[in-house]
Image (cartoon, rainbow, N blue to C red; front, top):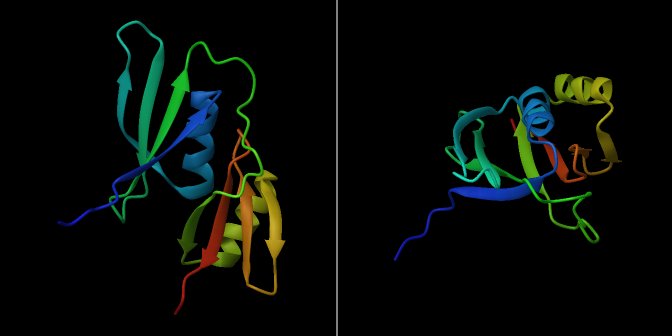
Length: 123
């Protein structure tokens, strides 16, 4: 029996704002979308174009207010080939929320408060 991880899901309050963030901050692109026939939800799948792993953004029509992320200890991680350029972009976007210079990594925060770890590629 073999398992293959195919996607992770996060719920978002402003779908278009989230899509724009993931496109600009991480170079992801939309690959598919499903709208409920009654308009109650929309699912958008984004991918990085390299791994085949997808990020599913779920928007729920009736959700009011921000999501409770608790202690926000869960996160996604991305390896980047040009760490300095990524850092400069994220600094310009104002989305860096935590830096660990000793470990050589940092985190960015998306529009809903989810943290994303940015790691330099090992060369």
